[in-house]
Amino acid sequence: MANETDPNPSRSRVTFDQDVTVKELESLIAELSALRASMKPAVAYEPPAAANASLNGFDVPDRATFALRIDDDGACRLWLRHAGLGWTVQTLPFDAMFKIQDALREVLTNQKSKTIFVAYDGSQPAALDEQW
Image (cartoon, rainbow, N blue to C red):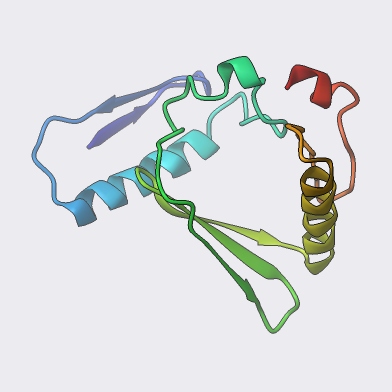
């Protein structure tokens, strides 16, 4: 893969024309992820509206698989398996796990489609549920 960084932070040229192994493709995905993270605008902190949720192509049907680990420093690592992207990991402050637990309890108790937005600082966009 060749990458040319454009002076405009919202653009980058990527060329790719070769056969790759699974390991090479995983490495390419990691490189592209790092490239995207450096671009502007940044990825939104709010999830996309339901009508557009799968337009980015990342919604791949697969068996849901996840793993959790509490590190010695109290941070929680949450891995989510994605059939195309591989394992993605988020390192969360320990108290964020309680927010996730509360959000899951609320959704499961009400047994209806609802989006609960949980940010590290506990903030919640006002109209997020109306989007879903």
